[in-house]
Figure (tube, one colour):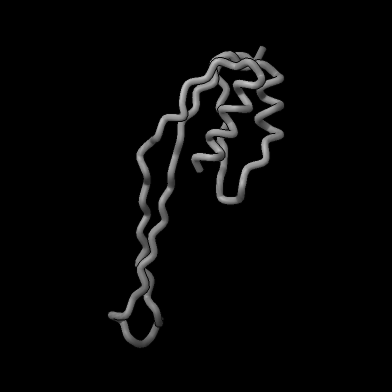
Length: 90
């Protein structure tokens, strides 16, 4: 996670963008309790936990070169990136 955030920051800096971050956001924890058997042993259950980590990176001076670099970036499986553009891309 941290390596992916570092790669995104380096890609943006190489393109000449002005960035802020990465800022660590609150970790979301989702807990699930599942019955081991649907018919027998009602009290026997498995517990699972999923943690979602988020980082916020603000890229202020965005142009088409920065966007192309971010789109071509190879990230490991399990890491997703959401790009939100406010205003116009120069």
